Image 1 (cartoon, one colour):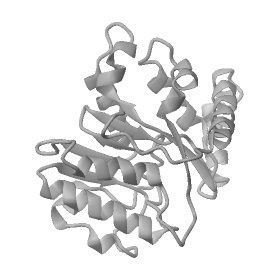
Image 2: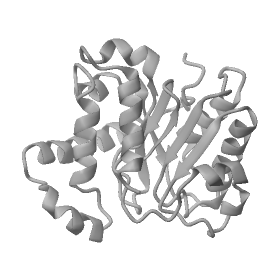
Image 3: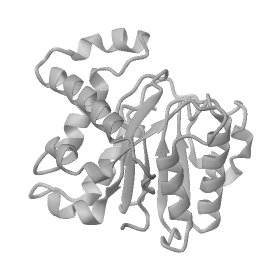
Length: 238
């Protein structure tokens, strides 16, 4: 068991995981077939729905791997789902587990770049937002360079808990959509989310150990290039 991977819960809801994956692949294949043209992006944005830019980004992501999108079909153990809007509990457990593990003795955060790309940054669940921020603050205390890029604004509830060094590295109030939301720990691990609407109750994410996946990369591709690809998604939205 990978010490940094999110925990598996008893009675994992694999039915929901497969359903969400099938829904993603249906839209992904529609984009590949030209049924979701880039010029329709604004229409999808008005509906707060995943649009062509997101499936285009996943096309580039999968292009790093020999099996391309088959990677997620074959490796079901990298997939996780979570309930996004249970306001009474901490949601986004896979991300919280991932961050907690990065803060543990299992990971040396000193000198590492911890990057998060988000949308509303759990605006609907302030408990989760606060917990995520506490982990980021802890990672900074362990010597990591931490940055957050999000559509959420700096003056929203709970955002004042972000310490100043992280605030200086971060970008809030983005008007452009970051096509893939993710948390990335340097060139070691990435936790990307699949496309979803803001109102989606259940969401799908995956955990990528770049060292374990390195043999899966196409010839000539490197994990640094994959890491840089995710960084480029953020810079393209600023």
